[in-house]
View 1 (cartoon, one colour):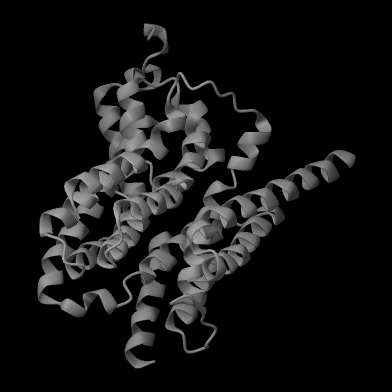
View 2 (cartoon, rainbow over the protein chains, first blue to last red; view 1 turned 180 degrees about the vertical axis):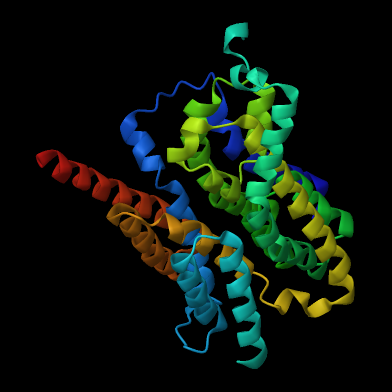
Length: 103
Length: 246
């Protein structure tokens, strides 16, 4: 992986983060757009984690012995039961590694 | 750039309260900084596994600072794909940051350019999730800087650990460290599901993302994200209409 490729990737990622923070960009955001954007975080994060759990090597994995699935259920239970991010993350990580080790 | 526009909020801060804000930001981010550690280790270890030089693995985290894009690009380098497919995929994966930038736009425009460049560079999924749109009214740049910088440091330290450990533990990449991503994002999203609109958004994004991952993996993330947002938006408008009818 050449430095050139790394720099090009960095430029793309930074460009996407900074583009709409440019003042001169002729863009007015109305209340409807802002409301639409308020759903960006839950939608994007969900669309990232759900396939990690359900899709393995391009195929659906619905086995009940799938440690990703079981530990994700633990995480969901923890996240709905209490609001501490760290408790949810550490608890479900622990469940995940136990399931992988003994499952 | 006119003087009156630049930097109103940060200059209103006395020095000690700047540090306090930054410290509070770092502390609020700490659960996410810790949670991302396994993922950072994986990013470093995978780079070694793919035959990258240690400095390349680290520079990726220093300059690109985007977990998903880094992991996918490393995999594509390993499969000996060229620049064009790698950059095209990076562009698709990183497109979600456009949505974040747009959501932050009105709040960040009054800040000076160095502030916007700096916070723009640090604008990750996690930093954005810490500043959801309804909390943007009380946006404090120093708080965001502390949160973003501490997360950046954590990500790079974790990468370093992965780069070093990747040499001695070759099967580190098969430990399932990517489950940390699942755990973190569940912890970020589910507590915010307090209305029918957010639930609709999350459930439809979930369904679409599975279909996307199976049948059109390149654009699946983007389509599922926009689809989920559209459903959430539609449901919240309907809820408003019902409310105004009484």
